[in-house]
Image 1 (cartoon, rainbow, N blue to C red):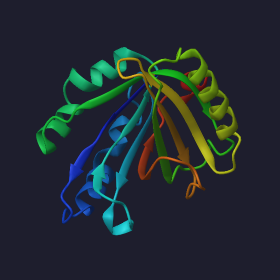
Image 2: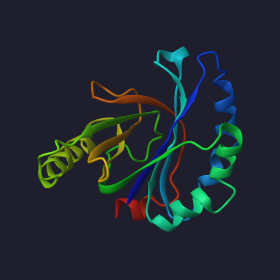
Image 3: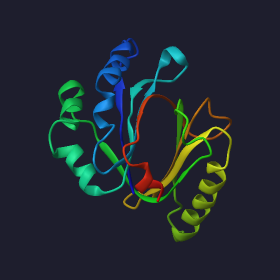
Image 4: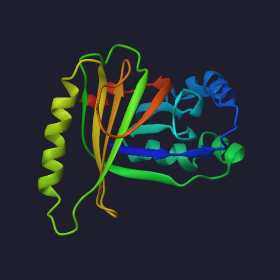
Length: 190
């Protein structure tokens, strides 16, 4: 599993209805994308109390071939580049992913918590601790699914969770889910 996200920051006066209509029109194009486990079409909207207006899809890939095809195979990421310019794409190696008790329900919200690992610590310890948090998170009410991934260039750990309703008190950035493509969660959740 690989995790990936790009963030398109938008002006404070940007009409977020444009993003909502874009996802409504184009979101289903990834509903059967080969190699994709999950794509969450995420936004932060200042009208709903967020600090910024942002379009920030988050992906969980079953294989790197699918991710590569999406990014430079033409037709998919090309649309983002044409509309907003080419954003930087964050990538994390998957450490674990689990379905929640509500995996069969629509996801309405998401949280992403990023932690830098201490520079003088073997990553095995913090990643093992994060995987235990992942297990406990997946058991929480309202959890659709949750993942842990690591960027070994920055030694950064990301904990991403999809929720069927408003997340409780959990750390991290909060997003609204506009659409969820789940073409191959069977392989993702193994």
